[in-house]
Amino acid sequence: MEALYTDDQIFIPIISDYGFKATFGNEANTLFLRRALQAFIKSEIPIKEVKFDKNTFEGITQDGRSGIFDLACIDENDNQFIVEMQYGDAPYFVQRMKFYALHKFNAMVKRGKFDYGTLTKIYCVAILANNILPYNDFHTLANLRNEKAELFDDQMTFVTVELDKFTLQEPDCQTDLQKLIYTMKTIHTVTQPTQFPKFWDEEWLKVAIDELDSRKMTPDEKASLEILIARNAESVKAESRKIADAKRQEKELFVLSLLQQTDFDVNKIATLAGVSVDVVLAAQRQLSAK
Image (tube, rainbow, N blue to C red; front, top):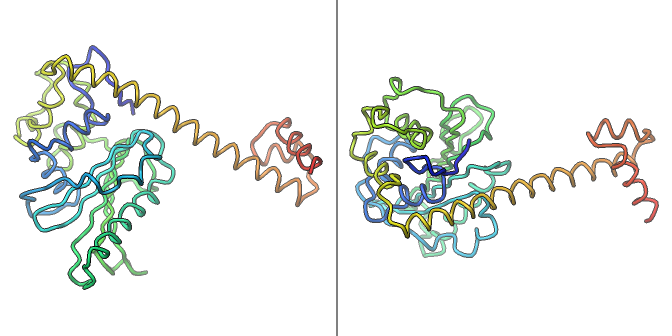
């Protein structure tokens, strides 16, 4: 899914760094964020207030920014929300979610809340442009459960939204979650007001859409947007290079293992590892040098 903004677009994609911060990170008006969080966790209870926790991951996530945007906030009942957006590949995103949630859990305990029964809930929300889970549903809500799928504990909840799996059209969008995901997938493709779905008149969505309207941006805001676009493009390329390097190293280790533990010829090893014969020959030379 393409998240970059071009000059002929009226609306900036929500699934971009600028769009994510302008909508989910809008501190002046949190209506969109509150309704979105309520939709993500499928709660019937409105979230009345949120405050941003800007220091949650300071010094922890700076090396993992490639194509990733995050925010943390706390509602009026001290429930903790972590929201992640990634438009690049995310092969280990579940592990990243667990890391964030457990870091938050440990931080809560260290602040003196040693009565575990009084710990507030932690919701870790991941919004991904690409697919990572082996399910058909675009929205997955997970808690700790036993072997019978019965709830074991709901103090920590993981929510995953895979945008690529969402295929509903405008008339089929009835719930807030469906309206939200439809908006996230299509807002940057709209060029005429006649294309607006009726539900975009709902106040919580209007708040976000107004923030994404490039026609209302000041010259400084447009300059800031262009800088972020360039930065994000480089981040995605860097992340793709890291993933490609990791896959190459994994194959090379597999080749070395086959050379050391089997008597297969180089052609068979190349086929099994999915590499060229030259890669296998280079591994052979590496072993011989040792």
